[in-house]
Image (cartoon, rainbow, N blue to C red; front, side, top):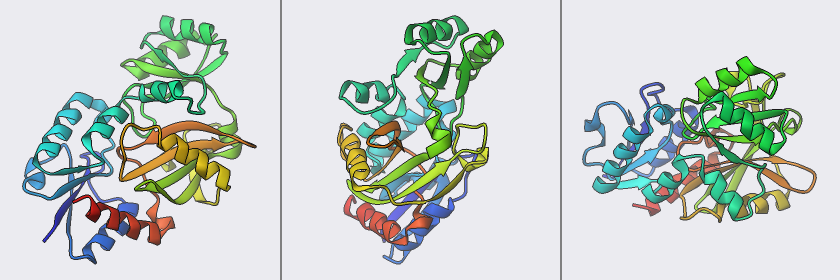
Length: 282
């Protein structure tokens, strides 16, 4: 019997509702599916056919330990997504690579985790307000909105970074239009969800008060998201392109290839396609 483990984390060890739908689709195919935290007992990952990265939402606290664990999984079985593309996607500096390839994203710069560097980069970019994110981050951890003339805020942002990070302009459109997540399985678009932050927030996750609903983006936006995905250095089995849909263009926020919520509760057909795609990779 094929044996797959969905990797979670000690902070959120249980299977997420979206992943439970995929688990059911795999079980219907005769697959044994277990769920285990990546930073828990390693016996759960021994001798399995594949490890599927799902809700590993605390890796940003120990990124080098996580990378070592990824390498161990890749040497003993199939890791999905594959190690090379996961390694590329671990650091948010991948956004700088995408910018160099012409991806439509806001101006993005690397920044050091100290208030002087943050202020200097804001001056260089001509920003009164900016968003700073740590190089390694999940679920918006360490993200801050900063104002150039707020000295205590700059200090707090540097402390929240706690590591090198990136800076972008604050896009107010996210509060108005929301952020759309385009889900792709083996390069094929399956479904989309628009996430909207609560008033006064830019973080769209439900733990910060965000709400989501199924979306039906125009064809040109889907093709734009597909074009961004094709800039990645490998072929992921699953991917989520997060972008703001403007009148005639996209603004890329993130290309998520490690542990994104894939919103399969909105599309059971997409969950079944994901299960089939996983089986093809074994």
